[in-house]
Length: 506
Image (cartoon, rainbow, N blue to C red; front, top):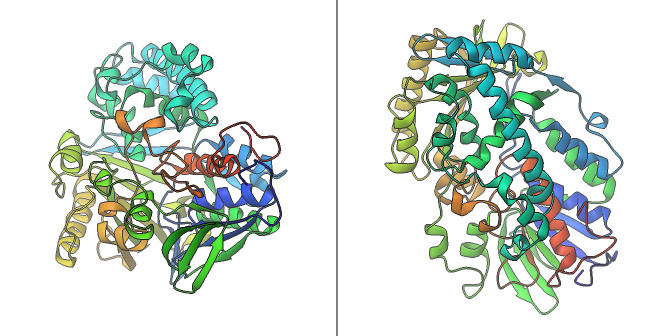
């Protein structure tokens, strides 16, 4: 597609069936390409998976449906809407926060109520929240329009009058911690405005304050739940792809990518074929270290120098009886969470007093658990690369459940009828991620925007990347957009000039 024109005899293989790969496949097929998605696991969706056992259904990865307009925009490109595939429910409360000192609060869709909540912790905090959200709203609108929906994955893309004009509004390059401290003194309010950094793979001290825009998403866009769980989104993407002619092959591991004269040879444990182009939703560290010839791609040492987002220790628990006062989404914060962040980014190790997240989708959806039971997911962010042998996992599991019982008053022990787990080694083995990161590259200052790996792989003419390791970054909405940008990059090929028919939403 190097001339920018789609042809029905153009073939594209998407390696990896995560959200970004599924998104890219839809855009490419809609433009006229013959698209095949090859996924090494038996289930499509990547980390956005579904685990079913004995009448329980668990989301294995992302569980927050935020930025609904991004999904509306995606399906709208194809003349559809999310409602054609799944129903959404807006959550109220959006989430519940438990502090280990016994304090507890709800964040609801009612912004006036949230303002009163902030004011109850600190005089003047309601007005400060208004000011903070106004800044977050401006930053979000400019950022999405000029940096996210418009691909700026190359440094030269920043030499644009629109970007230069927008620069003063986006000059938030200090840390989130110092930025938030400029608005609020109370540590609990600071935590409320920074917990979303875990979704970005960073800490308050090393994530640029540009990302305070997440507060606009959190407090003003709302949090939703797709009926049946987050895997309903995966099923929707696959259904749309099939409608557009995408072929899906699961349980087939790609073992090598070999640039050849007429494209890229894709070797898998099911055979070989040559594609005109390849979009790798497999992470580029794995692609360049394990799949490409040794003389292609970046120096392998490049990937050793990057900062990766956290891995996760996860429990999937089918629980008999009530789990009140847990909400659909619950967050548990220690009095001081800095030691936990230090154990992720500064001195990697298992946290002694962890912050963690619980999802109880059965609070909203009675189809995910048998009557009289709840489907509970516990997620503790931990450092990638940790030794997580079975004894260590069992010990940490017991410590987290004991903490939940002692500090929050929810004792699940003795009532667990189904139990599964995931940890660092799970993500490393199942998704080939460096150190078993569950998120990808963290959003540090030097790994933001065009400083992340570009969609066009260096030194390989017909290879492109989509997913959390490239722009725009981490999260389900960003993965959807990354697939769009990767598809557009395939159309541009080596020629970055504009093209007409095959440039989705550029």
